[in-house]
Image 1 (cartoon, rainbow, N blue to C red):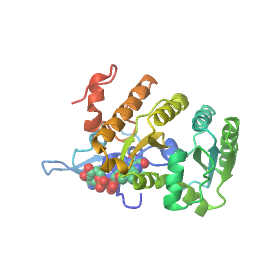
Image 2 (cartoon, helix red, strand yellow):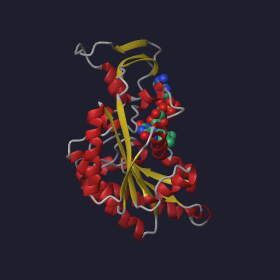
Image 3 (cartoon, protein in one colour):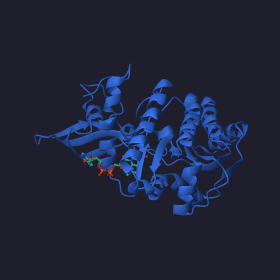
Length: 301
Ligand SMILES: Cc1cc2nc3c(=O)[nH]c(=O)nc-3n(C[C@H](O)[C@H](O)[C@H](O)COP(=O)(O)OP(=O)(O)OC[C@H]3O[C@@H](n4cnc5c(N)ncnc54)[C@H](O)[C@@H]3O)c2cc1C
């Protein structure tokens, strides 16, 4: 977040912690100046909120990622929300946290942030960043709501109720902006914290419909226990398989191959639950095989 550029965000159509309510970069791009591979300079899009003239080359360009070098971006700005509340709910079981997410969405609440950290991730983050996260729980949900003060108060109360109904241990409300930034920082530093404890990680971003989250979480837990794997589940339920340092010295190749097999098992399970093989990072070479072998998915080159 500190080092990424507007050009890189547009090229990757990046999303962040507030994506649930505010969407991704594409939703804010109104126009682009692009230098095409043959050197031609092209302006795509404009300041008009409504425009259906011709093909939407701006969106085509955003979807392709490799259509040229972006030299100017016309962005839509949104006003800073009048109020914001940041909360952390802790749970004794991962699937209870997953159920709370489904309950919040089913209650038609759209928080700006609704992110998950499991025990493995919480402990790694705490070792690394010393944020003061609760360590006596199996999972936590980081929840943020923003907007009109009355709406924020109402949504925060209803989210707290959803968490309590799903058996949460505690709901902590950030006292001020500094504490809220610290809690959001826990999520932001999670990948770095996990990478610190394991030199090699396999990050999996396959997603399932929200109603199937609890089933998926239970499945990941079972596989992790059975094969004694250290798996962090975090953010929008991405799984990170940590391959231990000792494996570097001792049969790394075998261990890596086994972890990759488990990762593929997670993918297959997600497809069976009505999910997709990638929610954010894209197909790329490692997953192109899945497109060719799974029924119902488009074939890719
Ligand atoms: C630890 C970590 C966490 C991340 N978390 C998230 C996340 O939560 N959500 C998410 O969406 N993404 C995430 N990302 C990936 C993220 O999309 C990119 O890191 C970042 O947003 C891209 O911006 P950048 O300036 O770093 O681009 P770079 O990494 O520098 O570039 C990314 C790509 O864009 C191209 N590019 C850069 N500038 C231009 C330009 N002007 N015109 C054309 N092409 C250009 C580059 O050639 C490259 O192919 C994460 C990455 C890391 C390392």
